[in-house]
Amino acid sequence: MNILLVEPSFPYPNKSKNQAGSIHRNFVPIGLLKLGAFYMAQGSVVKLVRGNKERCDIEFEPSHIFVTSIFTYWSSYVWEAIEHYRKLYPNAEIALGGIYATLHHRKKYFKDKLAEYDVQCQTGLHKDAENCYPDYSLLDEDVEQHVTHAMRGCIRRCSFCGTWRIERKRYDKPVDELTREIVAVGKSKVLFFDNNFLAHGDIDNVLIELANVRVNSRPVSYESQSGFDGRLLQRRPRLAELIKGARFKNIRIAWDNSVAGHRAIKKQIDVLVSAGYQPGNIAIFMIYNYDMPYEKMLEKLAYCAEWGVQINDCRYRPLKAVHDNYNPRKYKKGQTKKDYYIHSKGGWTDALVRDFRRKVRQHNIWVRYAKCRGEEYNRDMERWSEIHTTFKYFGLDRPPEYEKIQTSPTWTQRVSLMKRLKNHLKKHKMLRMSLKGINRGGINQVLIEVCHSLGIQVS
Ligand code: B12
Ligand code: SF4
Image 1 (tube, rainbow, N blue to C red):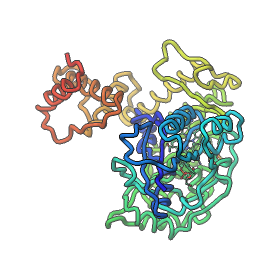
Image 2: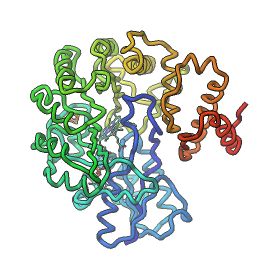
Image 3: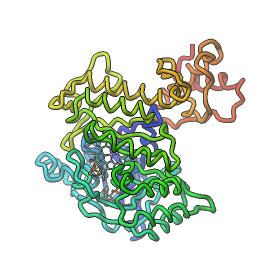
Image 4: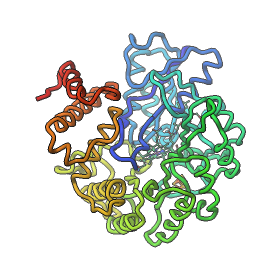
């Protein structure tokens, strides 16, 4: 078979503004990479495309096209991809799978669309692909981390969550299989996409063995994308020590229940701190725009300030949502329920959603840059933080103090050029460039030349 794997042109953020949001990096269509590995092993010719490409970019005639899907509210990108590839290859067999397909396949509108474009739908996990390692060579660019699962499913049934509908069966990957996989894939950073990593039935051994894994004689570092189940940590503080011992970074726990649960959350933070994590490097997932009203969410925020931990704000979108056009830039004009889901039942409005996000952003900046110096949040700190993000984008270290940037014409020009160039590269989905290694005196000139060549105004 000639198989074309398609990741629709999902609107992934290029890079989140703050560290608590650093979870948005390194997206890869992991399901497709496993499917590709499986079909290649079967002798098929496989090619992967990201977005809607033209025939000339896809140098072969696919007999089968596999389209993946993820968030339900990104459904339009899925159907656009299907429409595009159906027109391009009228005779190919098209199959749609992934999370959105699994959550919506029973709905009438969904079935109608399948019929309209003559598409087969496959729900849930692909058993054969699950036994394969993702083949990263299918991607054009190098990916620094390996994405995997230690377990599937979840031990809980939270009302807002789709996880237990998507991964109905609990499965724990045996420890030796997991470590063998990490060594075979050979990347020294591993990202777990598990729903509830600590619920693995053999978690102690998993963590002990992860600590021992070496890739090219180097230790491996880990991250659990969905964070850790704080209740399990609280029950067994030893897990926090094992997590630390295994070099897990970007630690997150969730606080989705009532404000009255603050004592338990504090205990969970204490367990992590006793294991060696700094409060400022711990983040708390918090669902908002849901049943808990804005005022109560502010109480949670105040506790987080007292504890000195960061917040990962999670705006609720229902599992049935098929669009989400929330635009953070529209804070002046505002948006309505037509644009995105607003949980008015819980008293939420567009203004409150934006206000809560703003407060969380300011809180995180304060935790990262000011708290340790005993200072309050101020707007310059946020401006400096944005410049810092731009520096990181170009592979540079920390910028100087904000005051120095403001008072030096060279620095002001440099920062302005960097911002313009970054916006241009992002807008046109161009590869980011590195300014690392260019001598300081020459950076402005390099930036001016690059901007000129791209038609960006530099005055
Ligand atoms: C990791 C993860 C994230 C990551 C990144 C996801 C990514 N890949 O881009 C991050 C942290 C960024 C994230 C963020 C959010 N997430 Co999330 N996330 C997940 C999680 C845990 C896994 C998703 C994933 O990528 N899995 C990897 C999949 C695609 O690969 P796989 O499983 O190996 O694929 C297999 C099958 O799917 C199948 N398959 C896949 N494609 C195809 C194609 C064909 C043809 C076939 C045959 C088979 C097939 O075969 C593969 C092999 O078995 C899911 C929960 C879950 N269990 O699914 C929630 C989930 C998708 N997230 C969810 C939510 C709510 C969010 C947030 C909105 C939370 C918030 N409020 O802030 C944000 C939104 C961010 C945004 N940009 O909009 C919801 C979805 C809600 C919805 N309405 O769609 C889920 C379902 C969890 C939940 N709580 O309900 N998330
Ligand atoms: S613990 Fe997390 S993954 Fe499990 S059901 Fe609740 S929200 Fe979903």
